Image 1 (cartoon, rainbow, N blue to C red):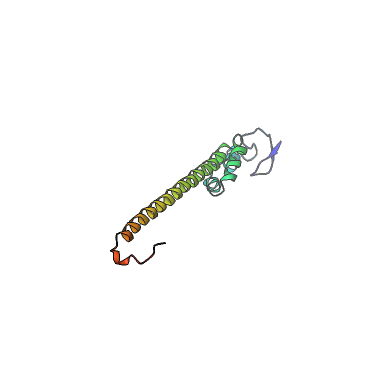
Image 2 (spheres, rainbow, N blue to C red):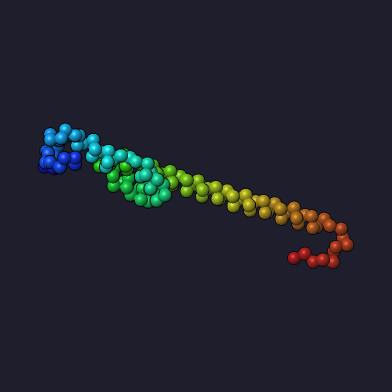
Length: 122
């Protein structure tokens, strides 16, 4: 047996509607507990490990919430991998441009007139 959330009277545990006040019992329970709210996705995005854990724990009992948390964690993981790849590309481009500019600079130094020959190059 359980109690109605609206009138507080005792009802059957498998009842869909309270026999005393007439209000639906299951709709309210499902919408509160398993709403698939956007907040679970935000939590999963900013704390991907928590989103993954919630996804694993809630897969069967709260599928909407678990999907939202899992999607947030997946989007966060893709975002982190994308930033990592982008940072590697930036480092490679910086090193490539530095190597190219050193090559141009050294060619310029060696092509100077011979009256600068007394200067030692390191």
